[in-house]
Image (tube, rainbow, N blue to C red; front, top):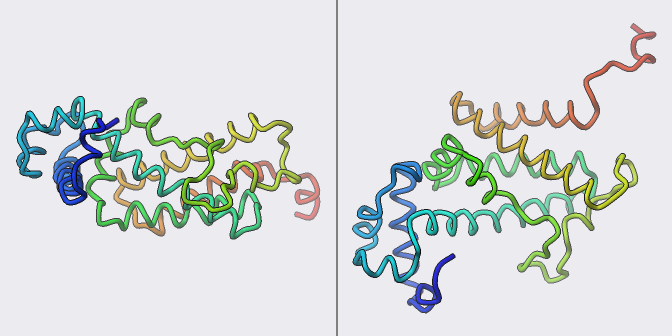
Length: 212
């Protein structure tokens, strides 16, 4: 996390440092990124950088945290729009999320993040489904919005596990989209197919077989 010194900077200086970091992380993955380039892009001294962040990883995860808050709110609004229906809510969220990532002005940053995803980055990308949204006036939690009546889920922890699993599948699909250079629509459709498999199963029911 940034130091208090960073937050005490003027907005213009904070934004300049963020922009300088985004430029470097858009051009190179985390392990290849250079603090020298970041401070050069940001027009600050190397000494000043270490007053704000412990290292480049600290800065990188701070940027991911800003992005994580945005898509948490996007997920919340998607489920609200679909009245808590699990399949329809996650489907809507996935379509908006894939578009948000793959059509973003920060495309290079996200492409590098997904193509070089490791366990630590994956952990940072995850959201706290139990947490309340800071930008929500009603302070609603996602797990309170989801309608569980038609789900084979008995506890809150089971719902959390399912949400994490679906989100992991979505991130894997976006990673595949970048790797295979798929279009936004192709990536969206690929995930929706997987969403249907997981939600409704892949087995043909006996009733359907009899009709055939």
